[in-house]
Image (cartoon, rainbow, N blue to C red):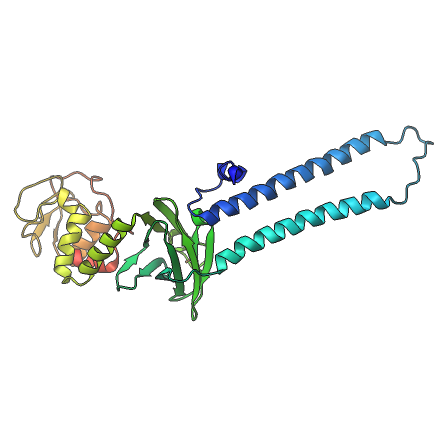
Length: 312
Ligand code: CUA
């Protein structure tokens, strides 16, 4: 419909990245505009009549009015028609949301305190990332490891509880490329607000390529996996590993098991826990000759598995 692009709600609602999201915008615009018109008529009418029919003097009497059948019919019938339109319209959209398309791409997503874990049919697993191809029906099958979570993608206008002990599902067909937020909308503990994932919509080719790479990656021995991550996460941009050359940060060549002098004047042994701390909280210990605050923290950007792989 021509006015779809001009739907009032699309001006201030999150990007609509599915057809259903646009439909929700349209219905929302209708509700908002009709409520606004009703509000103006009601409040405006009240003010106007209060002024027009105010008692002229202490002894004056206003006309004695009991009822008006035509007016009463009108103010009952018009809202009834509007409510039925809203009901039918809303039912139509909701019905679409609950009718799961056949042959949809299925992805299992499990909520746990406090992350979203996605598992693809091929066995590929990701943390806080759901990658999907554009213009494809995708069905998300939800489960929970512990308490109730809720899978919410504002740009798709979908929201569904992930309940322990049973499966629930949502589906969508994204029509815009890009990164969209996944929020948890069920209070699930202290880190509830940090349970944020990314829903990434990419082209079909990019998706297939990514899935293939990920499948290879997940079966690598962990030291090789770590080597790859060292490149992917750009650690290699600042730390040399093949020789003792100094880039932005200290070289890691033959460092493991050695002693490191710190700016504080202390020294520390380079072991797993020191490396872990330096990745997650880089400013805790600064190697002598280097500045504080240069390396960003990787807290929340690496899963436990990835962290172990890099250290390995
Ligand atoms: Cu999970 Cu809130």
